[in-house]
Image (tube, rainbow, N blue to C red; front, side, top):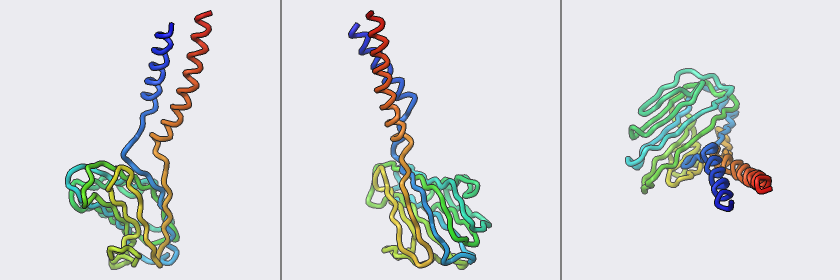
Length: 210
C-alpha cells in the first residue's frame, strides 16, 4: 500500500504541473506616461529595438495601449508585426534596427504593457529596447539619458529578467510597475492545489484501508 500511496502522490503532482505550466525568460511591465506638458502638440512615439548580440532571438511586445492622444499614421521598420492600436505590435530582432513609429497629437497621458523576452547568451552588447517621445520634427524631447540619445526608457536584455531604466524629462513623467509572471502565479496556485490534493488522496487511502 505504501508504494501505491507514493505513486498516487507523484501522479497528482505531475498532473498539476501539466495543468499549470510555468512561463520563464520574460518580463512584463505596465508603463504609464504623463504627457501633460506637451499636450495638444503634434509629434510621435518611437518604439525601437536593436539586435545587439546577433546570436539569439528576443522580442518586445507592446499591448493594451490606451491614450487620450489622437493617433494618425503608424510606420513599421524592420522586423515588425501587428499594430499599436488595437494591438499588439511585436518588435523582433530579425534586422539590426527595428522600429514602430507612431504619429500622433499628444494628450495628457498614455499607457501600455511592455513584455520583453530574456533569452541568452548575453553579450557585452545585448539586444536593447528604447522608447522616445518625438516632437513634430521627429527630434526626441530631452531626457536625462546618460548616453545622450534622450530615450525616456531603456531595457537592455542582459539577463533572463531584464529591468526598465527610466529617465527624467521636463516634457513627460514615466511610471513603471512590474507585472507578476503568469507562470510564477500559477506555480504558487498549483502548489496550493498540490497540498490540498495530497491531503485528499490521503483521506481516500485511509478509507480504502478501512
